[in-house]
Length: 70
Figure: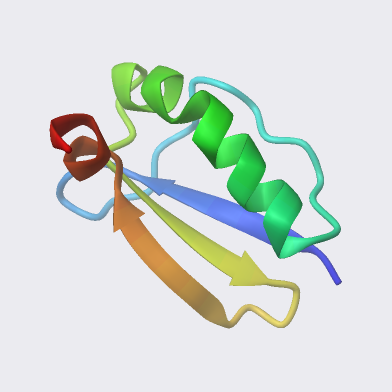
């Protein structure tokens, strides 16, 4: 199974990530990667991210801005 991130601006439109993600074979790998690069992604213009599996099903979404404020 493959896992992918979608990167969005505050208004929900898709944006290119400041750091290009690798291919993730597990949800844990995808989550570890976002944990490592979320600040760079936020500084590059991504405000929200959505994780999907290879069927296209959205697993969850989260705000990078809220992570900064926490």
